[in-house]
Image (cartoon, rainbow, N blue to C red):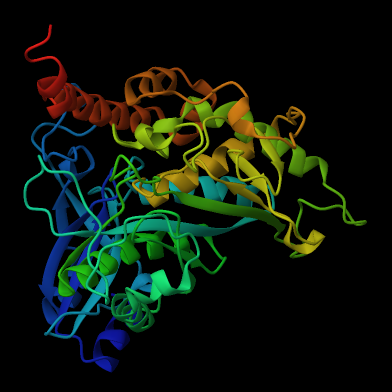
Length: 449
């Protein structure tokens, strides 16, 4: 048993522990245990959870045809908490802690299909080459009025003035102040949970906010994004509103993204390998971009995983439709921010806020990795409006899954079993979605066709 876990629980007077395992959709699953029971279970290896948590869909069902990977008799997996992730959980009456766990089989082998393990393997590939990725996510989300009937559209909530926003207020400080109580509560909760968030701004949508995370290790940042979503939803509910990370929650408002800034350091020297000694773009930098350009459109479901994700990716809607790249160009899917050579980085603007942070980050990194290893060369950067260029991203989850299933270079590195299960989950969700008759069909087709 980790002495670090025991020490943290004793020092903070923790009574209960939420042991969390993120599933394929980034949904938090796991167990809540009294602190003493948690510690004894970790010590004797009896903290377990069914392996089927990695095949459950967002609707709570299970796809067919994957029993050769996760047997249908659903054997238990052993949960092994990562002591570096334990932190106080804000908002509970009983002193509670969060801790994120990895899963292992009875032979003590890690479960390779687990999203957190997928990201760990990608980071190990970089480490084997002497590289250490550094990322900084920017996560957007909406505050919306409580909506108990899914047939009714979402609407912005009322702020401190008692009135809801009706127009776009990008970077509006007074608009931000409308939700000052919620924002302060979020900051306080994140501080208690030791989440390293930086600034928060009002984004372009009505009651849309964006938080920037401080740059750092990709695995740690994925853990923090996972917990941040949980905390924000809880805080919003305490203030009588919803917080949603849906990619496109309202038809007349911009979508919500999770932009991922990424750079690469040399483990031995600590220097940014995206820059040469004289401050110019390095060959590795260009190859990394080439990998993103070539492969990201083929694995879109890893960062745009839901049917709703593709409603966000529309021309002139603050979301990219292709993987053009350019300097300080926000119409591009891949933006190169203005920076000195030490801070040279790439901003991947494709992922939606609805994506599983482990998989979205792993997807971006593995594409760049393949580009560097294969010494790919990128197309020319652009200076104009990328929305005027051809669309290279799929228009729907159906089209995206077709490309995903044929992406051999990424499949070989992330694992065929992972690809098969992820595809099966998304195909099942897509089938369920396509079985629903929408209000648009009833409105426009019922009496006219």
